[in-house]
Image (tube, rainbow, N blue to C red; front, side):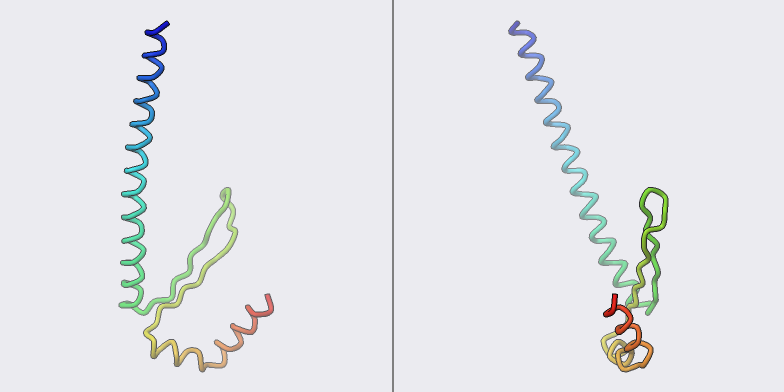
Length: 94
């Protein structure tokens, strides 16, 4: 009976150790992803790009995202444009 309890406790200890290792690995991955996202933003700013991403749920398109990365001055100029004002009005109605 004691041997079974010992084996069960040892098994639980090993599982907890595995969970800790998995958690550490996930945290490292998340940290790398955060750095990649920050770097991606810096690259976009350097290249002055417009990026469209498509997101899927269960293999079907669920939404699209449009990102525009401009310098502060260029963004200020964009906000003054008629089409930008129309775009804002369109989304404000949604």
